[in-house]
Length: 274
Ligand SMILES: O=P(O)(O)O[C@@H]1C[C@H](O)[C@@H](CO)O1
Ligand SMILES: Nc1nc2[nH]cnc2c(=O)[nH]1
Image (tube, rainbow, N blue to C red):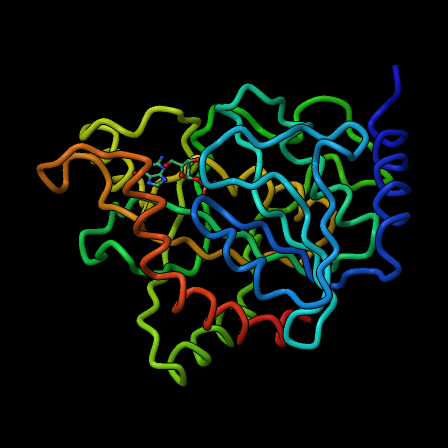
């Protein structure tokens, strides 16, 4: 049975056999946000199913491949499709791509997701910079054996989302005249959307948005000393706020509606991810 370090090495070797550069910036594109990968030039596509020890995406709106190439003058590797705890993957499987990104040279990671708005000042279509997170998934991605080569046993989490980069993003959004929220992202395990009572609870404990991903990748990226930035696309108001049911189709549809703004903002962010 291969250990995590051996699996990372094997997956790294496979990816490096496909790309002849070391990506500086990693991107994880959430539900309905994979379209950003189309902006990458000189694309090299690496399907998850071809990478040793990689899971495959099973959710509508998640393609299931790395897209590597040039974006705004930077060498990037984008996950067009991510893995979720609710799909039944282990925490090691969900965060394995982040371990690979670190190993091939990524120093900055931009995490994106579709989330439900808990803060009632938000409207569907808003973009939210993640300032901090609350892990209510019920599990920590670093549980189990710690490999000191990958990071410390007890990582500091007082600033997972890079404040300096977040401040620059706000300047960029102002210049681009993009309405940008900032707030706390709460990860629930999913796959159910929240009940109205769970949304009220999230609000009480300080969450501005609820989702089912991102926190796991952010924690492992922090463990690996990668600089992390997170952007949520508020695709719907969380349960109970509007008198209407929630549906994944609406999530993907709203993400599609705001894709131009999302792409414009992200393309202007890429150069400052240093
Ligand atoms: O991958 P993300 O977090 O963007 O996807 C969100 C959470 C669920 O996977 C899905 C629910 O509609 O959207
Ligand atoms: N947990 C959760 N994830 C989402 N992803 C998109 N919308 C939502 C939501 O309302 N709740």
